[in-house]
Every structure is written in structure tokens, then in C-alpha cells.
Image 1 (cartoon, one colour):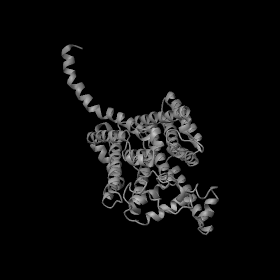
Image 2 (cartoon, rainbow, N blue to C red):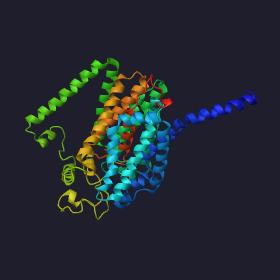
Image 3 (cartoon, rainbow, N blue to C red):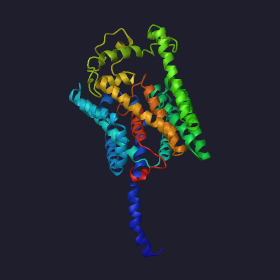
Image 4 (tube, rainbow, N blue to C red):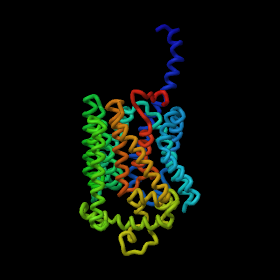
Length: 447
């Protein structure tokens, strides 16, 4: 090409570069956001942090989160039509986030609520910006797969190099300090890998997906996290139903739904036959009906939530409020909950009870409904979309991860909890599920 031709082409190239910057920014922020969520800025240090250190937070987080938030707002503006589409589909979710900000007005500790509610707002803005700037859903799934497999490799390396920190008496904890968070992460990565393999068209990508699934499943099994192991195999079974529904059509989906309704009806019948004896019913399915002592913690959380049932104690204003003000400090000794060292317990080990403590029962129900709305949208699109196997697999991944999010919160507390890896990813997937991708859509033009 002549010099004159190069000069003439330069403005065109510059316009193309400016037009494509959201795609490049999206991939960079996505990887940083996932690493921040699943590894953190001080992984091993925060896993063994004292209550005082948790209260103070990480100075690196206070630098990184605003930077990602600024990029998130830039992506929202650049893809504002797509952002509005995602917002319209997640109105309930946005209402909950705004209510958390308003809870500063009645919080037990307004300064803590201000910090923690703002973190939730920032993560929401980042998630919305990332969801709005997805131009290719299969490519998004690919980056998710690659980054989360890296997280598993980091955990396996930490387990091999620092076993004193990464291995506990009850299971492998990796970089998380406890086996349950480690199992949760491995559960998520396993589902991401398996669904990515079903959406990949090249043999090399399918082989890498199988390898990633094997590594994450291996890490999951050595964590000995029974809840995450059980939920993973349940999700894989549900994923098999997705695969069959995609191939056999809507009638199969109706049959599967009828089967689920029959199971629910059978369970209700079992409850009635057992005279509504919850302990007796649970004893038929699990060996430990106290769920390793969680029943006592749940009872305490329930009583505390009923003190302020409509508005809650304020977002982020119940646990991790300092040793002097710890909610368990006034309990009489004599039970494990009363005897436990102050600051060790910092969640209700039930996401629904936990959110009830923070923002009251009405908005907790709204929060749960918002996840069900996103789950329904992802499920419908996984079955009916004609965007290709990669798009279908990505929607199936969203649906399965959101289903696990709801189920996992029965014994752990991550529902709308600021900074929690599962909550961060769920926010992103809720917004992404609100967008339609397929041959009739053109995300790169902002829709």
C-alpha cells in the first residue's frame, strides 16, 4: 500500500480501535474481577485473618475495587442499550441492592453498612458493565473457563507447597482457610468446565474442558465438602436433562417438569405422614440432623432476625462488628455456640437467614425471587435458543450455577453477600441471563 493509502487508512483504523475498546476492556476487567473474587488480593493471609483484620479489610481491595468500578461504569455507558436490557430483566435485583444502601438509615452500625453496602453496589456496577459488554456468549464462557481453571491450579499448587496452611484435619482448604469455601469453588468450576465442553466445537477445546473438569473434580473430592460434592452431582444430572431437552424439544421439558412436580408432591406427602416432624424426616436422608451443630446457630440467627423482622439490622451490620459488639458475646456458656471463641462465627451458615438478619424478610423474599427470575430466563434460553451449541451451553452454565447458588445457600451464606465469590459470580450471571444472544441479535452494536 502506498504512503498516501496508509495515511488515508489511519483514521479508519483509529475509528475501528475506538469502536472495539469495550471488547478489549471487557476481557481485561472480567479476568481481574474473577481473580479478585476467587483468589483475592491476600488469599492465604485473609484465610487466617483475625476478626479485627476482617473488620479493617484489605487496603489493596480499597484500591482495586474502585478501579474496576470505574471501568464498569465506562462499559455500561459504552453498551448502554445492552445495560438497559439487562437492568430491565433484573429490576428486583436492583431493588435489593438499592435497599441495602438505604439500610444505612436504620443500621446498628451505619459506618460499617456504608462501607459494605457500597462494596455491594460497586460489585453490582462491575457485573452490569461486564454483562452489557459481552459480544460473544461462547467467548465469555471460554474466558470464564480459562480463568477459573487457573484458580483451581493455584489451589492445587498451594496445597502441594503449603500443606500446613492448605490442609486441615477435616479436608483440603486450598487458599481459603476452610474446606467448605474450597468445595464451593471446585463445584462451580466443575460445572463451568463440563458445560464448556458441551459447547465447544473443536476437539482440542473439548479435551481441555475434560482436563479442567477432572482437575476441579479432583480438588472437590479432596476438600471432603459433602454438600458441594452432592450438589455437583445433582447439577450434572440436571445438566443432562438440559442436554436431552435441547435435543428432544419442549415436550421433554414438560415431562421433566411434571416429574419434578411429582417429587415435590411426594415430599409433601412424606411430611404429612410424618406428622410434620422435621427431625424425623431429616433422619431418613442424613445421618447428622443437626448439620454439624448448625441447628443451634440457625436458632440463634432466627431469634436475632425476629428482633427486627421488617428492615433487618442493616446490611453488613450483624457479624464482624468488633470483638466487643460481637452478637455471640452475650450468650451464656455451656453450649458450643456460647463457648466458641469470639469472632470465629461470622455468618449464619444459611444464606436466607443471613440476608433476613441484614435486610428483613420482605426484601429477602425479593432477593430470592430475583435469582429465580434470572434462573428461569437462563433455563428458557438454554432450551429454546437457536444461537448454536456454544450459546446454549453458556445459558445452561448460567442456569446450573444459579440453581446451585440457591441450593448452596441452605447451608452456607453467600446470598447477596458483598465480596463472596459465589455472590459476585451470581450477580454477573443474573445480568448476563437478562440478555438475548443469537443469530437475530447483534451485541456488538449495543443491543
